[in-house]
Image 1 (tube, helix red, strand yellow):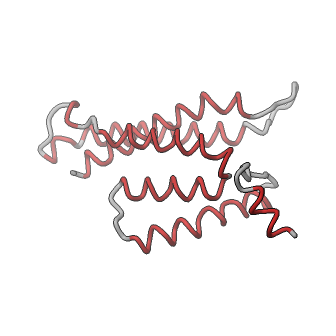
Image 2: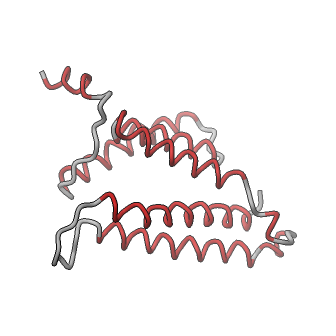
Length: 161
């Protein structure tokens, strides 16, 4: 796959996911009247920037398509976009049951494999290290509790005793 096509597909994937997040964020975060900064403000700002950067990536991939010998927009439409969106829907639906860390590790592994990483050691290391670090960052720095999941409660009780 050419670099222009990769840019286009990655940009389109990010654009779709960021758009979905902008739609979902207001319904997922409780706000109070009169607050200028709400708990949804930072996610909305970050998602808007991701949306703009993804649009720039799509445009860049489309403009550079001729340098790689590609012609026409139809060559860029790929199954990877739909698979990535499907992985994200599965990820979001697993979070209430498995919790943040296992769900994120599974989604991260699936996306890494989907986008061409075949180094099993690297996938396992990233999936074992990144989600717990992100969890610790949100829990102790941002003071935000991420979901533990209903299926993980018995496991957590074993370690708490």
